[in-house]
Image (cartoon, rainbow, N blue to C red; front, top):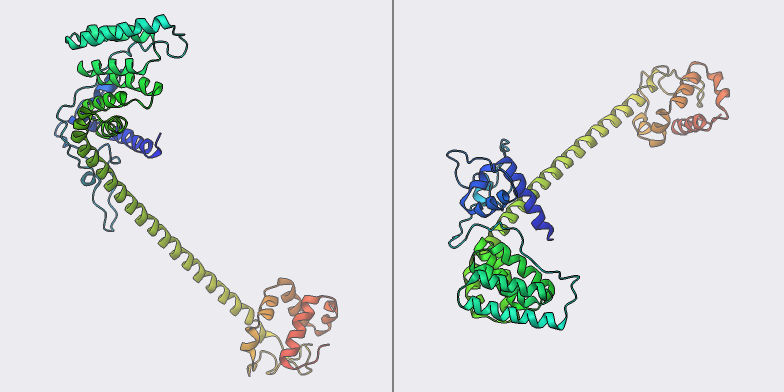
Length: 370
């Protein structure tokens, strides 16, 4: 089954749950009759309900949420307005399924075929005399004798159409098409049955197939009646689909925009944290006393606290290797230990991270590495 039609059916069922008044629209008479035939209870029609409020079978259920502050697309009810002339549409028949014969298991003999043919001829004669019930009974007897003959089901379907029983006709046509999908007659009568039920798209499809397989003036005339209505429904559905796709595109673009803004905000916060961490790492230099055992003899220029400032300190603090080393807790602990007692540098001779930092500082400030 077409997944799009299944999706539309789910949306229609959900709409009926949320807005049962849709079931009381004039064009939904066939659906009410079908539901009641299955034993369903239809909720009573509310007073002063406008037609197609909040949607139609082609549209989603009405929304009770507040509209967004941004410009919104046309309302679903506006999209779902569909006016089709249902003149000639009847209530669906709800009779029990008719006798269909033992199509799969019955072994048909030549005698049974001959007898079925006799019954068929008698049924056609009764049909010509206008005795519909007799014709129906005779076609049924013929089907029971030879359930493998598609034309018998198609002929009986024609009788059901005259008796205003389209659902029974559709069942017969379905069986006939299963037996012989290349026969035009079942498509013709099934198309007429759908026309009686107001199934305009299905009617147009079946009647077009009937004319394609074997052109028939009667089928062509009915096709000319139902095709414009089917086209109107198809165009209506396309319009709604376009609106839905446009709405989904706007929502997707809005989600992408929000995600991009969130990403940019997170990047700004990360950069701010990195800058703050770099400043904190650089702040430790001024407190180390000059000449505190670091290579260079007299210590860093400026003496303890660097009152005179350190030439090139900004360049030093922008060195990524120095910054990474300053962020290492072990390295900073060793750095402070040596700053307090220069002799303690001996403890870190075999620590490559500490000695790498000291070598880097020695290079920067022109001293010799110990």
